[in-house]
Length: 350
Image (cartoon, rainbow, N blue to C red; front, top):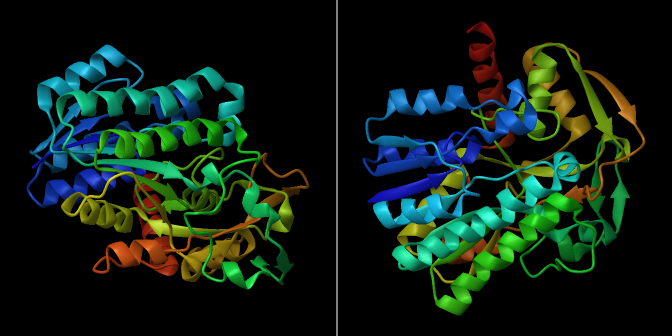
């Protein structure tokens, strides 16, 4: 099988490349290292591109900007992949407000370019889009919460398992980033429903893992752990540091993508995250990384939370398990932390 992966040097993209390349599939990776442009040297992913190129002879890197419509059309016409995994994105709330044209052109227009190229040249190929839970905007903040010692928790029993896919994406503040991802998300759904294509939007919680080039503007756990290991200062933005996120290891995202490609559906949406059992607050993350690294967390606090940020969010995985009962989470929060720490040690020594 020939699989096209956009954002192939990023966290999810590189994990998808590794997963499918290890199975012997032919992988075409599309990336232009725009994270370095967005986030500077800390976001540079060339190291990951080189790792993949050196590790897999069946991986081909193509330097391409998904905003370039002509180039995207030519790419799909030439290669006609059997599946497309679209992970390329501008992923930061804060940066989107500073560079709104770039944000929309990458997230919305880039996704549209790929969808239309897929429709024209390989319409039967499954198209998996990495969306985000930020498509729900700040609507989850309207759910009543209770304050606990180290976290906020849902007070409404209807959300005992987290946020499910029918939750509203309308009439809420998304941030410019969230809005551009809504545009892409809805378009991916529409190509599935209107044209009958096999498409899926994976609305990720905190996607993480050892190959994440985390920076302050994006990459919660990776950046937090790196800050602790380098003994730099971390800034908490509002909510007393008790804001909660569920975390899913990139490997488990890749295995779900595999499950979907093997048994694709049309115009689907899935909230993909670690679920309640793999949720953690910033304060709880501080405690866990300190216990593993032996180093105290150096941090400051500002009362102002990020625009559109969630007080509490974790994914209800009921639909995923119902549609793909053989899929399961394999890496819990403890293992994920340990892997990120081990990888940062390796990178800091190199």
